[in-house]
Image 1 (cartoon, rainbow, N blue to C red):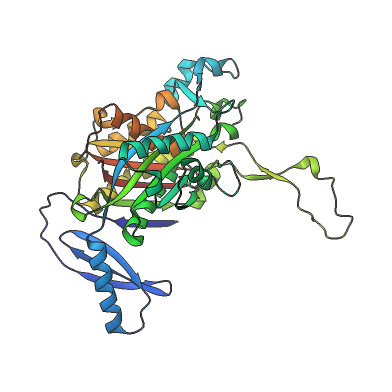
Image 2: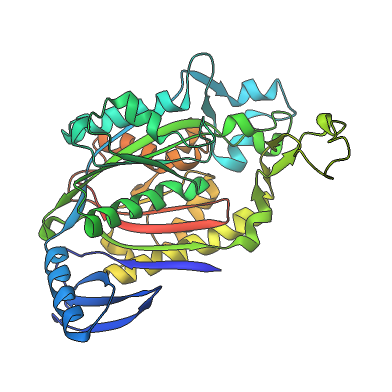
Length: 403
């Protein structure tokens, strides 16, 4: 099992005394130092050649990072036109609206069709986020496309950059972490801002899992929908910092419970190599339908998500009573309710739009956030505990402030 832990900043009153401490350790071929000033923790790295020179460089590095924060200034979303209800599915497989809604909380979902594309949805969500944040596309420094269903093997992010008309050709790349993808993108954006000097990072969560669903399997076809959501992460002064702490994990042992693995095309198995080299050329491959052990994924989520959020809250110096909203990956309403109960978060402080969209994978958190912001539920200054979880297995949480 691999894990990653992080502290960003806390711009809230604290009863703890201001302290200063420093610790060092090896990271790869370099080193790191953590220095805490007034309840803020920063990480810097450098190649050390001699002790005095390294200390001097660290001091300069920490000085630069100490004034750097990041905040969410805009959000946006986009969904396909085609809406499929539970009743529609009941005409394809043996199920019903009552059966689906009772077990999952889902009543309908949006599905890509016709001329809709995932890049198109992601671009529209990005434009909406940029407009809300009053950020020009030419001021974007980085685009992170969090998706497990790109429309090109080599990634979709550069196509979004092109569609947005970013004349400065900012870096754009994909992050693949299934339903945890947006959380990884958010943390990556913060690291680019704090450690790399980036000013405006566009984080997009977008997936079209309908393309990998077996529509004859009622255990999975009822769950998934397609959508895109986006946020703009912007550099700011430390006192305005809005991303307080994170907690990220992965467990490859659990990957067998939720996957869409590579498979060989058996129809071309007869195409040989004339005996030259056995097994060459390789047979064409494609990805299988989504395979999921629902019971195991449920047990994993209700156990790990509250633990991860608790860990992030501890690192931020907060408790569950300090948060305004709980925002979880929209996979199953029973998972959301169970996690909220374990965290002792009242139902009126839990954001959920699962009933209307189903599980939209990496899009689910920014999609729900966008609807909550635009409806007036989430207001500037509100504290949100967000958590994503899914295939990999991967899961992660972050404590953030909107606006």
